Length: 360
Image (cartoon, rainbow, N blue to C red):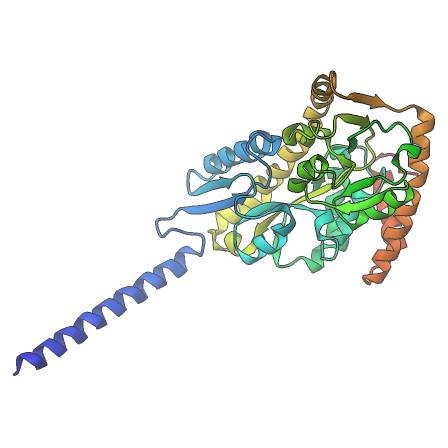
């Protein structure tokens, strides 16, 4: 038998052995699930599109990471990426559904033309007074009107930010002060209200708001006071009008493939305990930090701006102008195939059943 023949046979045996080993490894990986590292551990990747000093980081994501790793006995590890390092707030839906990362927070307004549209009712003027009220209603409303169109992701219970105040580059004490102003909006649901106020809507994501105010792209921005402290919006916009005009619905979502990759006991743990806890932490963070954030903002602008509180007459004028935004939302809902008026009627009924105030 020639040396050349023996070499070929040996080579074929080596290749066959390699291929068999690869197939066995792939089969083991299939049994472990797509989120497994092959050793019975699973990594859950989180994208935090705010910075590491934001209350999302220290009040929500970090405590939740500890809870997940404790409750799963280390079988699931959570990796958090801060500062939009792997995706912006405006791409969370596409990123999570596509598997770029496993969990993120949806700002419903940024996804107005997707299945998240029904949640944007919570952003309409004076729909909610704060996050605790929103958390009582948004999940049920979303289950009724949004769930069917969002089967590509795991939708966690919804909540909302604290009420938005107005951050401006000059004092705003009445509707007249807003005439012709460039006003930042974070989605289509805010356009009608800004126009009713006499302003010009300019769409900017959360991450771009500071720069927009600093460079004169916008003159004002409705924003949560808690979030504004973390983003330092008082620096380019030191005139703050206490408003609570609206909240922004926040909907945590999880990649479905990640969840399906977990053993049944861990899937149940996430669905019944860990995922609801994430929303609870988010709601609590907004609710508990509101008063301290107002006090902090007052101190931050004391020598360079003003913290403005409106009287009842001025607030009533702002409230009355909000009805046009509700009418526009109903029209948008109708154009998307929903029954807009029925949605609003159901929303008002849910508020009433929870003992909450109606916006008008």
